[in-house]
Image (cartoon, helix red, strand yellow):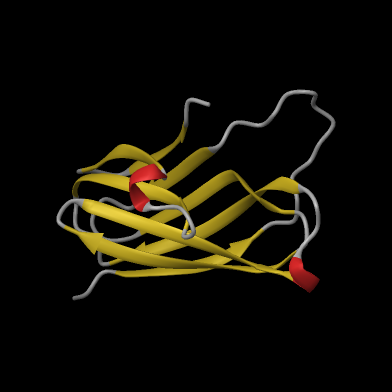
Length: 129
């Protein structure tokens, strides 16, 4: 069956009371045979979002996710971290390179991480800033 990626939803701005800039992370939950729940945690986008969309490309051992922000009235003069929830179906066990970030950025410049999905996983991995 074809591998299918879909966007489940996204949060409002995640600005809390911490003086620290939140780290950008991915949260992965894999059932061990076909379903990957993927969370892009603290992804930085415009404060005035109408919505987010995601395009998925599956090539060899790469999962490439391009996120697009759709702005309200052209957006605001600020960015904030949001959480984006996605799901990938029919993904066979294996080791993959996950490439994730804004679709306006060339995939080579997006964040990437090696993920081991040879068995059930449930973990969060953060990117070096």
